[in-house]
Length: 483
Image (cartoon, rainbow, N blue to C red):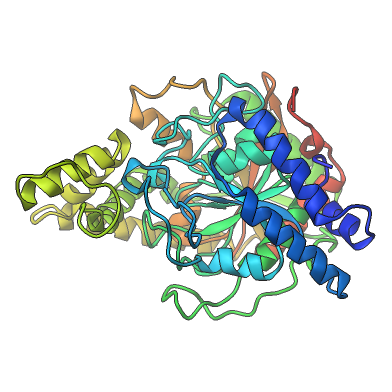
């Protein structure tokens, strides 16, 4: 049963080939057996999962038949789950049990999804390798000596290893798409505001967006359907109707205009990945798409702009973790200043501290205009580049990452080298656009992803293109050895 996709599980449950309780027990046993190799879960929720599975079976017996009803999933451990530890991968929140469910959690639970647990992640979603977690690094099931990508690496590794069919993730600068690419999955970052951020612990509020990780575009469509929608509790949520994403999967690609930015194929891109991206383009041309070269001239400024804006917002968001109200508190503080300093120093890891300090500096008097304000102006230029490009093309295609997954620890001494792995993904977050990564082949036995970007609220178009590509290729069906 562990090889079934979400769509196949929905059909199997509808046809009474197995029950949600049987499936849940089988996957919990598989997680117990295999996850010690991967470290993809922080918390397992067996009791909750079995009770939700039984409830889903009862609902099906009464005639309900939703696509997510009885389907097992997991949540990245920054979505608040009532009464369950929500750690954000940090010592700071190791003892925190959320008093409420995030909107994403509540919506998926209402749809009948079964929560198997909370997945490992880079601390406070800050990282591209899932090595900064307080609970230890996550391993890539394709090669246990390599990273799975981050910050949603736990969700990606668990789905890639067939521990469950799909999981939620979040994407601030590529944290859904990059791990999807490095583990041979399909991952979708929706338009900013499409999925509620209420109850999702913030890293950078103007960039964060929740989305699905699964093996196929069809499964991402199913999971996104349950996640998307307006939420009055979230001031950044956009009141835009949610289309039927599954209904758009089978549209023809005849005449689809695909733009390939010339800036993507620079010296920093592994030439073997470039070849796989060109092969993907040829496959889409066979399906009727028309391809043209375009330019995104301000892309070169994306990384410096992002690594000013995101740490600045992080330093503001993480100021609430002070050892007073919730989270880690140091032992025997001598005064309030000592409480603040030691609680934060002990509770936050090195990467989080680095980004807080960068952000606080960028926002400080005398530097705000020179750094933060200038970065926001560059952000607008990047958005304008995309708007001009989408006047000419329907989607933009390119690599998701410049390299395949690197070895654990290989970039720990050089944080900037890890930041450069986000070069193709962060522009979508700066502009608020939807982006998708889908499997496109292998380099040295490690997966490679191709990225698609679309205009605002055109997630259906991305899913349609990815689904049609997957009907004509088999990269997404490959399974890591041993899993």
